Length: 387
Image (cartoon, rainbow, N blue to C red):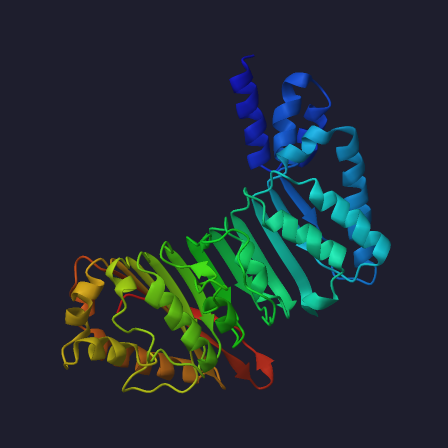
């Protein structure tokens, strides 16, 4: 068989996640070996379920893989992605894992995860150094953080090749120098995902190096996803939108104690915006404005009392083609759902009646309910509507 057909067959096995079949094929013929290894080693998962011996299991897995790489060094070149759970490792485990990470010279995606919020300062210096060397690699494009406390802002000053950044439930604190590894170099982000934005996030978003340049460059940002749990997160979001002049897709999740007031200002970033998705959590519905000030904020841009449709056709929104609203209603009793849904739909329809007649705009809407009825959680009830 031609090698191209063999490769296609092996690719199909990987697509169907037939891992055992790939392992068997890799030991059957040299014709299969290269392609099978490419799939089997492309993604390294150093993790186990949260348990008392988690660190030992991760270290044992790292040691076994390191022994393979010692025997067949070229396998390290197949590793493209790493998912690593940072646990409470002892000194011996730290050394084993650090030695393994140093071998991944071709990696382009790294995810650091902690099951519970842990202090980065407590991570052993040897492991910190190995992780830094990995992330600062010229090939590194995607970097993810989850559940890490006291992560240094200065760490990002040298992440000059990162284009995709994902940060979930992290806290930032730093007093170190913010000098860049290369003068004038800066990470030009294309995609940014911020979940559980805290007040410390502003240190990263607005932070600057010794030369005065920002740590992160948002001028090339095309996709932004942000979760706004508190009002303190708004300044960081506004700073991003102010600098994101090429933004195409914007997704926002807003909890009931936050507000969109001040977010939708006439930033130049909205000139290229094509898709806007809002997920809103609502406790007490205000019939005058059920969308957290969204309608009022858009009207304020024009400083008139015109309808929302006219506002969205202004120069700042001429490219908007998709608007998605996902609304989560909180209710104490299930019987209130129908009434609250009717009030929400009626109020929104009254404020946005002209918007849905705009042929160039694809509008969709989803209402969900969550609450407790007689000490029993009745979960989510969805109602899709086109108004």
